[in-house]
Image 1 (cartoon, helix red, strand yellow):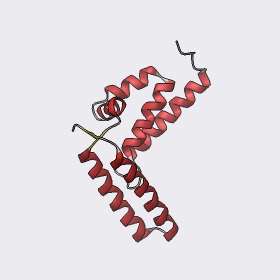
Image 2 (cartoon, rainbow, N blue to C red):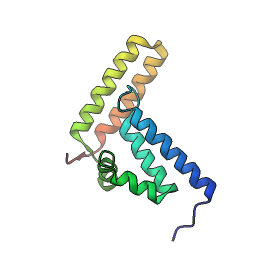
Image 3 (cartoon, one colour):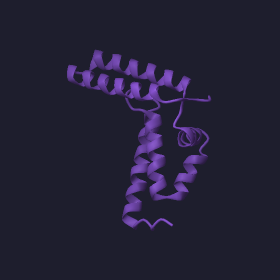
Image 4 (cartoon, rainbow, N blue to C red):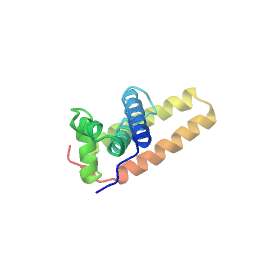
Length: 126
């Protein structure tokens, strides 16, 4: 049986979970801010800080399926891979057009790394 988490530590996990979830929701409409990894991070933080909030996220109609699928198989649907890759490419194009050279280069390297990691994962059933 796991040891109980101290109150302060539990609150820090909850804060990190809500921050991650909030950023993930903002990432739905914001370029260069990835939604799915942030929601997965929120689920992990909630699992450390609150079984109630973890259960809420797992039962959520929009976010729950992606968290459950990730936990079950560490797989991503091919359609989601294509969508993520296209959104990262569009974000990088905007960065190259609007951002300083160092920022565009950094964004491109991060997106390339994420895309490489993403495409190495197994395909989930969509």
